[in-house]
Length: 267
Image (tube, rainbow, N blue to C red; front, top):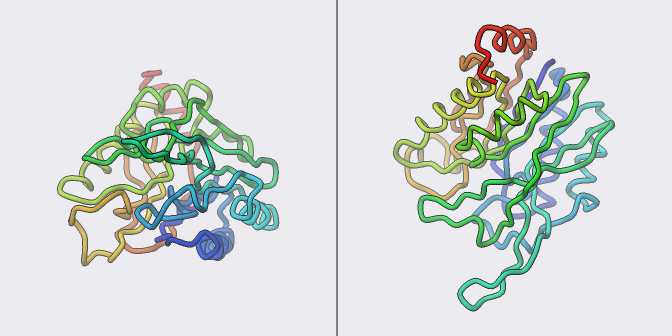
């Protein structure tokens, strides 16, 4: 199965981001991809304004816009967006929280996965503005079962094992990773480790690094570090982007999953 990983830099406006995503989707489909994976926060970049003001349900303009283009092209798409969730009180203020949702859409599907593990780390509290999800999600593309996780989820091995036990041979991971000392090393280790834990293909799409390679290594919020990647079920890095916007394509050999699970029966 041929997949594409779209590494881009989204901005503050949901309609501009939709237009960019549709353009990149056409480019990826033109390269033969059957599954196209976009980053977390494709609909609106983190640290670009209140998420609740542009949050939309799956019948909103962002999700249906990608759905219509995906169906026209005959491909399945995964892309990060935000949906309305609930209202909570934090330090005397009422906050309208959102779900951090990975939209899954295409010819035969239109649903979402809500990020389970919110990024409450490195002095950042995603749970203040994002309500955690509760349900694991898998879907099928041309007979291949695909699992979904988002960014910080990658630090939790059992989620990936459980997705594999539910039949996932490929796990897609939309991401907007934080840059800073040691963060790229952690990203590379974690993506390889989750592939080995689950003996699955890991297809991780990240936000490009704002400012590009010139800003590489500087500490930032979770706005992107680039380095989207495709990792095989035995932990080998088959493709990796740099810091800048880029589209990676790769043919996933599903027989590698079968062989990995026979020789390394960790599940």
